[in-house]
Image (tube, rainbow, N blue to C red):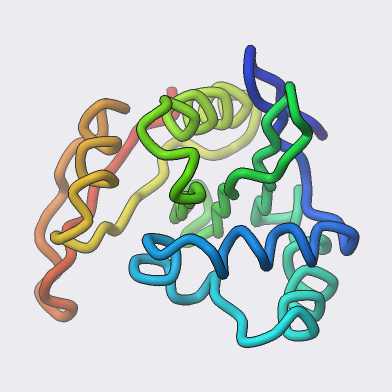
Length: 164
């Protein structure tokens, strides 16, 4: 499945994305700072993650989408949504430093949320580090509701975004 917007294509990861995605993550300070699981030490590790997890998880219980700028075809980020409960997803979003402050992530999450309306899922959560002001602002712009400060993991806030 491919989701298209006016400026983006959201599509499943493929093994061929390894080098471009690795370079995006490697060269994006904010991704390495706030999304540590996205960082792999080498292209080989990134390839294994894409091959064994990202490229296989789609449309079972989890979603792993690469974000491509339509005009250039460049990979600019990713949306990863992992099932937490039967009808709930935990959403992770990342966009390269160069592509921030241009509305790409708002556009991508809005389109992803629209696609989810045809599935069994009813909401997703975003757990955001309190110092990540850009993601906090995105959550609010998307209409996410602050759930609670995570007590066992100080420094993070959980937001809930209904899908319906």
